[in-house]
Length: 398
Ligand code: GAF
Image (cartoon, rainbow, N blue to C red; front, side, top):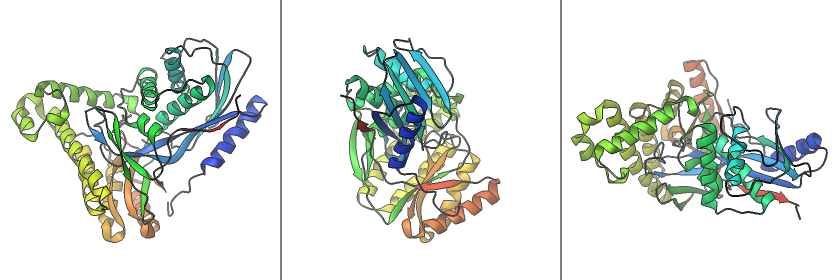
């Protein structure tokens, strides 16, 4: 990792999906849709705790090339995994299946619940969102499928409803009780903007970030995270228990004094989880303000504070992520790094860093070297601007 990995253009990704569709199904695709992954700048593990989050969609997409068929069949093909899944039209999609097709199936089940249950189509899926990297590859797959079904069925959901349908697919079919951040990011992403998402009201405030002098660098520790592993659900449960002990209706009303008063009853772990939540809600709002006023030193400090809280209080980091963040902090603003932290669910995956664009190559080379020396592992890095959310790329259906 001595340079940023280039990102395959979305045009090239669409071309690959179209070519693969044609060679698999023997005719050209008539519909192409794309939905992005996301990176979260700050506001971690608080989308399900009444918080605010500050993500952006990234220039990495799931693309589906498709066409309707006259065979009363739904045929799905994963180009990247070279795996098929096929169903009769009207098939009752139920949770329980393993593998990639559970995500589109969850979405098809959601549409069936709204009476859209007579779809017949063939589809080829491909993606350049790293799998298991904490960049919402599964949300991108769900949202891309929902966008495809909208195009085929002619039933366009409201944007929030589409994101919620995709979230329900993740809950029911992947078994991850996630919040709304990932699916909202994939649906609502806009070029050149972070989104300050109020996870309680579901309102979004745009936070413009269209700077060439500062790069958003995503560094993959190449430690795979697995949210269905139980830790994520356990954190959610601990937070719900803590809220009950605190007698709070929502986390935004909880103060440090409340925590101190209930410290014994909460016990050590729930106390620390709670401390993360109220700290992270405040940090996220402060970061959005600092970003708006161009105060990157403050943004950077808040990113490190967030990471430390996720490491020590919420306990969702891992040695490799800590190593990457420590290396970034050692380089510091003079070496070109404003701030860095783990991003996404944790237990592996990626860090996000704000880096002076002119120094990005040196920063990445130094981090690569340090990471390999410390862990014996290699890391990959790429930069992304805030990107456009899910969209129809082509629709030649009548
Ligand atoms: C995962 C979840 F899917 C999100 O909802 C969010 O909770 C995130 O972890 C942590 O902030 O990506």
